[in-house]
Length: 163
Image 1 (tube, rainbow, N blue to C red):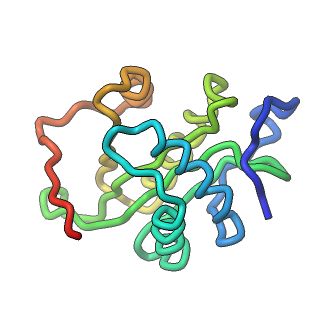
Image 2 (cartoon, rainbow, N blue to C red):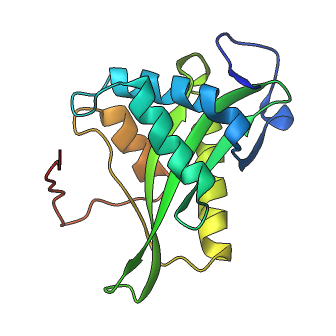
Image 3 (tube, rainbow, N blue to C red):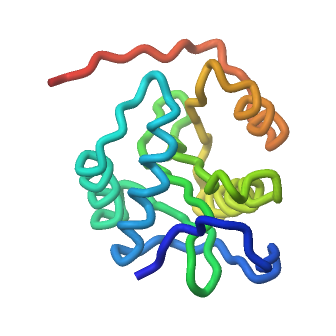
């Protein structure tokens, strides 16, 4: 079973690869999402809830994909893609969530590696758009996504929690 990298090592980008996650990666994926949600004002960190959601994606690839950035023995980051259809775009689109690089490995271009992989995947599969939500209070996240070619939309996200 893979684990999330906890400290800086000698691995460089050349030793890392982006590939689809598998069910064996679930524990490491939960660890990454727990860290993300622990620092968000909108999301609640709950390992059982995150595990259930991640498992739904991993077990139903027609609904989405999770890609991981990994070395031979550890996971450095992840991105979660959910597939849907847009009538406005006339085709399949992606909702991108959970773009996470382990905190001790940020600033090395690993997030860009994940996003570049997603962009290649979307082009090859003829997706029409990628939409993401990023924290309103995180200027770093917003700047990162702008650098990767994402733009602000005039649409405002709204939601209703069904419980």
